[in-house]
Image (tube, rainbow, N blue to C red; front, side, top):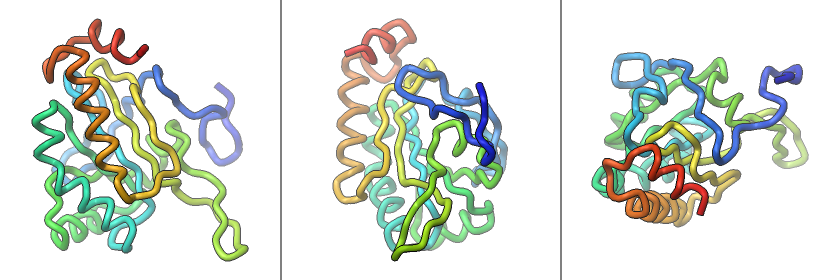
Amino acid sequence: MMKPENGAPAAPLQVGDLAPEAKLPSTEGKDVSLADYRGKFVALFFYPQDLTPTCSQEACDFRDYAAEFQAAGAQVIGVSPDPIERHRKFIAKYGLNYPLVSDPEHKWIGPFGVWARKKLYGREYMGLVRSTFLIGPDGRIVREWRNIRVKNHVDRVLEAVRELSEAAGGKKAGTKAMSKASKT
């Protein structure tokens, strides 16, 4: 696949594609890969920056529903380019109950296509586009929400997890059942 000058893939990953397996540092104190979560859903949300109002609201929304995601067989993971130390401060301030991953080299941000040209008050710059991806138990992307608004977003993601989990026969869904559910 050809890459443009900024290092992002020419075409971002989309529903049906296998999630990248690159390892990134997490607040759990170890490097993690999306492959580490095979066998369960992953609600992977990308946000621009720790400790900012909108990002804090989104992170707290996921925090407030973390038990429901877990009951539906899903792990929540937040990703931003911020360093691990800043992530730890974010977790401590808001009591976040899921891991945050640091991606300053865009090993996940690039393939998912969430680094893009943005415009604010007439000024153009490159930045992270707030997006969420639902990764199935087989490691493939089963749903995506790009350039989202925070209000009620977590509700939509949780609803999709529950729907796909039920369609696949519960939280221990196998790859074959997931493939069938993701085509609907």
